[in-house]
Length: 196
Image (tube, rainbow, N blue to C red; front, side, top):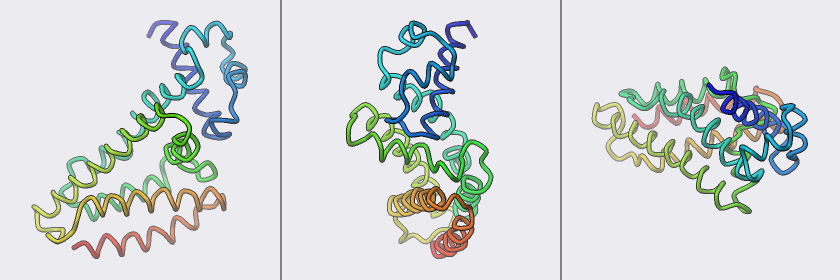
């Protein structure tokens, strides 16, 4: 990796950490520069604006992470009841990238930025749409293999799972405690079993 590419990646990683812990709007370019220890000139060499950097964080930090943790575990699922439960359980209880007290970074940015910035809306929509499509495909695979009832609507399942995940992340963030995740997972398992 070239020095310029390495500097750009460092800016994105450090900026993400600040934004995840403090919020996008309360994180200034000066905060990012102080944390990364790059010059203002180096920052503006890579990003014309803070919002350009924010969209790059979605594309280059969140998208690959989401692909690894939200998409791949269910991408070729033949048993969605088990695979969906294991994925959500891992995301809530084990994933080192996600912290209970800060919530879900995609959820946070969706709440904070989509009312004000169309570029953020589009970039975040692509991530969410990809997750939705993958859940729908998993449900269809389960129906094909006879593990999911034929009357189940994959899109409805997707909305239910995604909204439940984001909602419980907010409870965890509010309480700074994973105990609500455990209670949620028990009911989530019941829901998934009802799809059989």
